[in-house]
Length: 209
Image 1 (cartoon, rainbow, N blue to C red):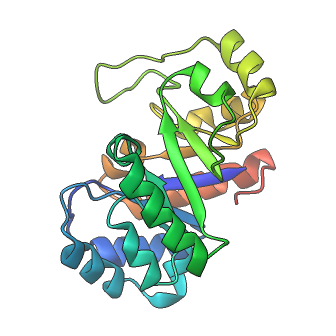
Image 2 (cartoon, rainbow, N blue to C red; image 1 turned 135 degrees about the vertical axis):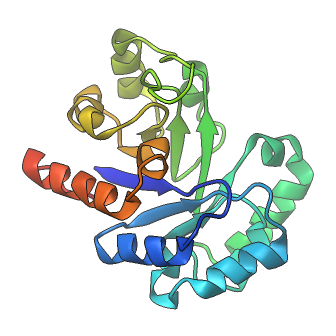
Image 3 (cartoon, rainbow, N blue to C red; image 1 turned 180 degrees about the vertical axis):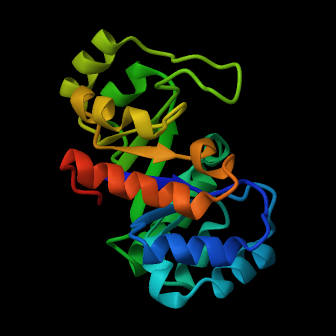
């Protein structure tokens, strides 16, 4: 099952050191989400991360950087999907140079993941669980998730309210994987907390991809 980490949306102290340690401990997919970063600032961050881990990084903005770095993929936000022509042209150029690059996106409605018009490598669906750090609540019932996940053509990642206690439930519901964010970045020692997820996967006998 896929274990994805979404970065802190802003810069944090010793971020490169923290991310590098997580890669060393088994992180296979990092979604680098920095909505307020300029292209030069995001480029500088990528340059600071050891190059052997670049192929584990999916970027949420400044997608042309995948032509300068050996990255894993690009994620399309709502704003990207609204700018259809520009996004289509950018993806066309990227795919021409890097045909195996991953393309991902996010949804908040079950109906979206039943549509097969656009083919993504995988998609996020949220919110799946009640959040312990904010006011939002789970957006779907277990019954509706079970039925939809059996029908969808997409590989669906559980996002929103996900913490270590939800790993077994995410697998039981039929998700392709889970994405963690606040459960890591709201902890004083995010590296140790991430390692606990790796260990929990092992304890449950679930391979962490």
